[in-house]
Amino acid sequence: MRALIHLAILSLVLPVFGCDDEPEAPTEPVEEVSTDDEPGSDQLEPGPTGDLMREHFLKVREARQALVGDDIEGARAAMAWLADNDPGLDAVPTPLRPNLEGMREEARSFADATTLSEASMAFAGMLNYCGECHQHVEGGPEFAMPPGPDGDALQDQMQRHRWAIERMWEGIVSRNLETYVDGATVMGDVQLRAEELPHGVLEPERIDAIIAHVHELAGAAKESTDWDDRTENFGRLLATCATCHRALGVGAFARAAMDPAIEEPTEEPTEEAAAE
Image (cartoon, rainbow, N blue to C red; front, side, top):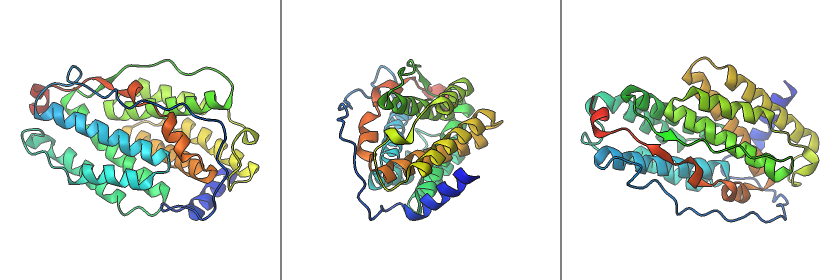
């Protein structure tokens, strides 16, 4: 309960548009990550559906990385594209239109978000529609499972956070329960200590409360019994990560640490599957 109270207070003082204080950023450099490796033609079926899925994948990934990295305007731009883009019946047949429209509506609601929590829940709701559509055609994306990072250093533990979030979002969009649970399990096992984190606008005890809240949410995610609950818990975790990154002033470092190459789908639904 104490963790929830602290997080609620933090959400009030950290609206979507930023905070007045300038927290101290970490001094340790973060290795730049290449964004050249994107899903290629060998990974996606050619044609309207394959082209659309590739575009959606890139924009959803862009929005998620911007949100976690405290680039709310970047996230808004990606979500606006997803809300406004109507690919037509050639790419999304009539039986799948409700999923597409639901996804677009959630993307539109992102523009109305006034807190990081609201923005994160809108993003998660959009992912749920993506997963429902993939489940309907029995042909969603398949992702390779990279090994989880080892080590006890702060950078290693934050990489485990990143790994966990990526597995959970992959699980949602591909409707792969094992992948989702693997991510939630690692998220619950990550050990962070307040004294190791950069000094921002948060007191150490409040950071400890947020870390405890992350573990609580990870446990709830593992115990979720349906995809609506799993998606909601993911959204709450994402909001907690984004809020903490903003408070500590490490958004740019969080964005740089997210390697897009490890989460590219290896397979997409065929045109025939989408039309069924």
